[in-house]
Image: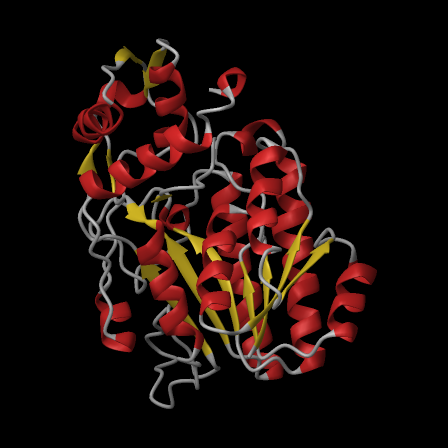
Length: 340
């Protein structure tokens, strides 16, 4: 197949592209290489992808409608995997417009392009952050998600709403994936496990919010990619029995579906820190702080729907995943002491 991956120089996009290229697919990767975090890391990911003859890189902005139209005019895609977004809950407090431009306007351009090309299946990244103020655990796709606590979360819920509209109006098959705290090699430096490692290696304090009373459903990158790969060919058809009087938010009579992809095993933050200490061979000096605005105390994914659909359950334990990350981090930054 010929597959478009947006955000191909990003963390999840890079790993997804590698998997599909190794399987023999043609991959077109789109990315704008913005400076939200170190561009060098994105360039190094892209350089790895460009080593495959079946990979083509398109440097463009999602919000540039002309560029997206040109991309779709040059290629006919069998699948579109939309992973590009302005990420990060905390940054959304400082620069809200970046989220509206990339996550709302940019996603609309992708939807329009897929609609006109009649793309057989659009898979897009949502987020566990859509559960917002919900307290019922585990988070289920059937739960209402009407109380986001960050602008990032609100834009991700908007993506799901926009996708359903296009599925309903134009019959565009869409699958939204609510990712739960993805981590692993080649990861994002703004994520806690990455920044903690950097600070611990430098002998600096790490800031731990909500006084460490937090739990996260950490999901290893290979498990995320496996879920994406299995769902690529699991194209929504619409549910004929969908009940308009008691509507399930995750399904529809339109070809629309939303799934959680999480480890289904939340980890106490302090256990996570201890596991990271073991992985990198350094002790953490901890500064305990109150909860930050826009954050939540716990995430926990109900993945029954994912298992029922494609027979897959993420399995990588946090200790193993952090060991793999630490090995990559040590190797990648070994000759770059100024960046450690």
